[in-house]
Image (cartoon, rainbow, N blue to C red; front, side, top):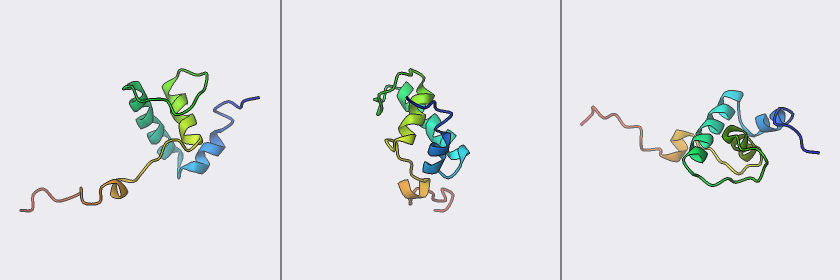
Length: 80
């Protein structure tokens, strides 16, 4: 028997630092799915947020902090 997303929230929170971060990751992934990104999980739901949460739960989606993704990006544009 499959668990509902509400029953799996504790597992989801084990993969991220906070509920806010989980919501942010899922929202960003849901936007990508809405723009045509391919699903990484096979579940019955067609709700993009639910799909994104399951992808996070199963470790199919990774998240990097901005400093990890592009460390040289934050430059002072006024300095010349």
